[in-house]
Length: 431
Ligand SMILES: Nc1ncnc2c1ncn2[C@@H]1O[C@H](COP(=O)(O)OP(=O)(O)OP(=O)(O)O)[C@@H](O)[C@H]1O
Ligand SMILES: [Mg+2]
Image 1 (cartoon, rainbow, N blue to C red):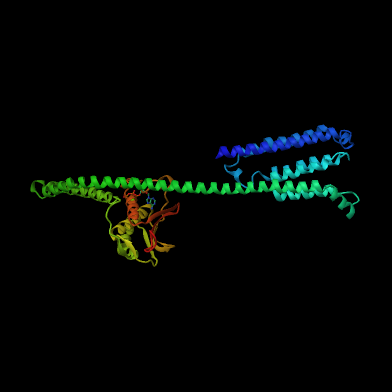
Image 2 (image 1 turned 45 degrees about the vertical axis):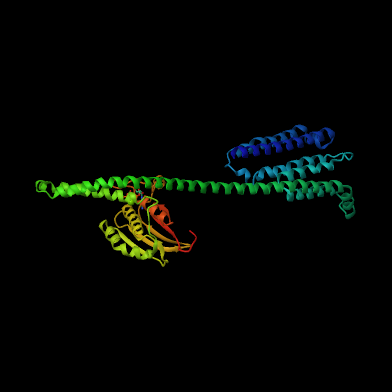
C-alpha cells in the first residue's frame, strides 16, 4: 500500500516537473525570439527569469515530495492531495509564462496558441471547472484591447475563435478525465477504508474464534480428565472420613477435617472446570432474569456487607428469556464476586437489567480501578488470574455459560470502574 502510494507520488511529481520544464522551454524560446524586445532588456533579463523558473522547479521537486514522506499513509488517496500550494502554483506558473511572452509579442507570431498551456496545466492539476475559469481569464486577455468597444470585442473574438474554442475543448476533455480520475481515487480511498475496517473485524473475529477454540479444547480435556480424577478423590475422601471416626486418630481429627476440606476445594475447582465444557448439556427454559437476580440478591448483599461494600439493584422490565437458571445464577455470582473484589471498602456495586435494541442486557458495574489493557486481553482465558487466591476460572466459566445461552459478554472499563454487560438475544429474534 505504502509502496503504491509512493509510486503514485513519484509519477505525479515527474509529471509536474516535465510540465514545468516544458514551460521553461517555451519561455526560453520566447526570449530567443524576442531578444530585442525592450521588455527583456534592460528591465528584466534572461538570468532573472531563468532563476525564477528554476527556483519554482526546485520548490516542486524538493519541498513537496519530501513533505509527502512525512505524511500519513493513504493521504495521497485523499481527494485533497496534491495540496493546494502545488495546485495554485501550477495554475499560476504557466499562466505567467504565457502572459510574459504575450506581453513581449511581436505581431508576426501566433503566440495566442500558447494560452492552451495554462488551461492544460490547470485541467490536469485541478480539474474541469478550474480549467473553464482559466480559459475564461485567457479569453478575456486575448480579446482585451486598450480602446474596448463592442465592435473591437466582436472582432477580437472572431479572430481568436479557434484558440478560444481549443482552450475550452482542452479544458473539457482533459479536465473531465482528471475529474473522473479524482472520483476514482475517492472511491478507491473509501474502498481502502472499508477494507481496513473489514480486516479489523476479521482479526477480532479470529481472536474470538481462537479463544473459543481454546475453551473448547480445554473443555473437552476437562470433561475427560476431570471425571477420572474425581473418582479416586471420592475414594480417598471416603477413607479419610472412615479413618476420622476411629478412636486411635481421635487426636488428629483436625488434620482429617483439613484434608477433607482441601479435597472438597479441589473437587469444586474441578466442578467449575468441568462447566467449561462447550458441549455440556444445558436445559434452556423460559425464565425471568429479574427473578433469578432477586432470588440470589440476599446472598450478594451478605457477600458485599462482609467486606463493607454496598450494592444497588436496578431491574428494568424485560421479557422472559430462555435460560438455564443454575448457570445464570453462577454467571451473576462470578461477575458480582469479581466486582466486589475489585473495589475498596464503601464501593458500590450496581446490578442492572434493561432492553437495548433487540437484546436484554444484564450489567454488573463496579467502582474499582478498572482493568489494564494487557490484562483485558487475557481475561476469560482459563487459569488467568491476578489474584493471590484466585483460580482464574470465574470469567472463563462466565464466557462459556454466555456462549451456551447464545449471549455475548462485553466489557467497558475505565479508571473509575468496570462494567460487564451480558447481552441476551430476545426470544423470537433470529439467533
Ligand atoms: N470487575 C473487575 N475489575 C477489575 N479486574 C477484574 C474484574 N473482573 C475480572 N478482573 C480481572 O480478571 C482476572 C480474571 O478474573 P476471573 O474471575 O476469571 O478469575 P479470578 O477472579 O482471578 O479468580 P476466580 O476463579 O476465583 O474467579 C482477575 O484476576 C482480575 O485481574
Ligand atoms: Mg473471579
